[in-house]
Image (cartoon, rainbow, N blue to C red; front, side, top):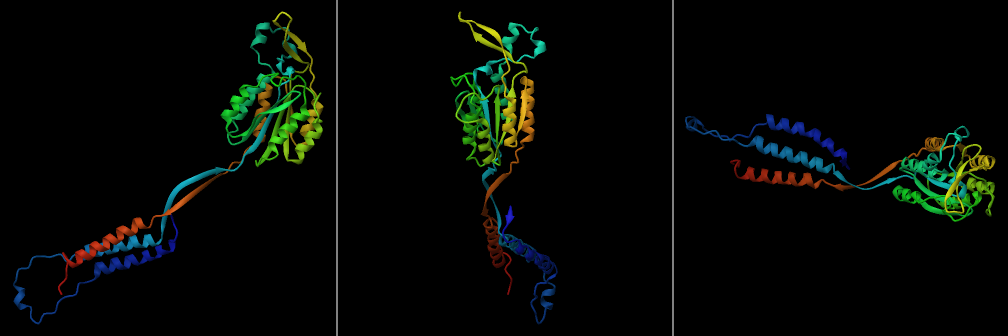
Length: 341
């Protein structure tokens, strides 16, 4: 509740004076020439209603003063949040992302059954990205996937449940191509971020390879991102030395083959440096989860909620009872408590 004209509360200072006047004042008496004839008469006690009528007047006056102060209260008609951070997750889905990362010292210990249970690079990235998204409740997040071509799997959205559903569909080789166009992927992501009105705009680029196709050089694309205020965090994934990838054999089965590391860390570092971002190396899923947690801490959203309220005049809720009290006081004063003369 608020009061539009609180200065009228100063009139309440007059009420103690009125109460004192009511308590100490005397009714006017009738002057008789001789009262001896009525001295011996028995007269029943009759209330003059002075306190009742005066109390009604004071209460009515109090309600009128409060009504003059114009009490107002209302309802919330809208709550708006300022923009958080707009984030594009740019995920490599080329064929090499089917690789399962096994550290060098564990190669001789792992069995085929163990390999079947392990997540490949793109599956690990998908699961880690899910946890990241769940922690960014106030941010708009989008998803771009790429190989030799890139496309938007999900535009920037605050509907994270829809985003997670689309993320679940991400698989290695889903673009139908098998090369890596990092420059094109950055430009596709930039196109999604350039018109956003977020407090800040970032891109998380995850790949296990090097730019070997596409029309746009990665460093040129990074400079475009820089001019638009987009910060790029680059993540190079894959165990040092390579990993193990399943390939189909001529008989319809599959076998596991050793693949070499082909990560261009120098270019990824330069992309991050140009855009004032940072480069990270993730050799396994645990390391990747730690990197996303680190980015989550580095990019905090400063969300402010703006509440819009509509205030309605409520003075009539006090004025009507005040008028009723004055009306009743007038009736009582001229009937039950009528004075003679």
